[in-house]
Amino acid sequence: MVRILKSEKHVFWEALVIAVFIFLIGMLLGVFLENWRKGNIETLYFESEIQMFDLRVQSDIFSFQDLNCENAVKENVKFGDKIFEEALLLQDLEESQALTEALKTQHRRYDLLRTLFWVNSIKIKARCKNSFHTVVYLYNYDTSIDERSKQEAFSRFLGELKNKVKDKIVLIPIAADMGLVSTNNLIEQYNIDRSKFPVVIIDEKHKFYELEGLKDIEPLII
Image 1 (cartoon, rainbow, N blue to C red):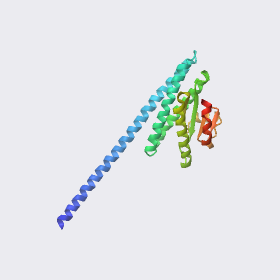
Image 2 (cartoon, one colour):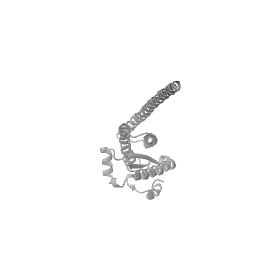
Image 3 (spheres, helix red, strand yellow):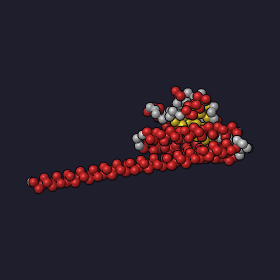
Image 4 (cartoon, one colour):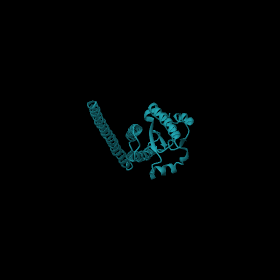
């Protein structure tokens, strides 16, 4: 009887040690995976930041001479496609793990970059008439479950629209509640109603706050 008890006790401690070992390995893998994802997002951001400033310098150079609209529009649309794809990657990352301040900071940096891209796109359109359409999607980062469902519906519609019309638009998603002065200034300049977010703005003129109205977007850009 004593031997049986000792044997059972020995098995219990072995099982406990194995369970603790597996738990620690899981924690280490989780930390490693989070750091790896964060590193990938940072690398993507820095690459996009360099390309964005390159576009800005190009625009400044062209301000002293005739603008090569074909090249300017091509590179601008190409960059727009890139930051849209990165927005989808960031969204997948945020959905796969708990939101942290570090992740929110990364998102904030991207929103600043996208706002800068919006301004640059406006400048290019002013010089190169009828070159492309800006489709800006403003939404709230911190939001309720009901509003999040509406925002997801907006995102799906815009993703399908982008796939359909391709280079005719640059699609720029921006979280508007990140406390960015530049974003807030554009919201005020174009008389956008924060209380009705999310909103889609076409060419800084047409605003769509409701899902039912999104069907009227495509005729504006075809």
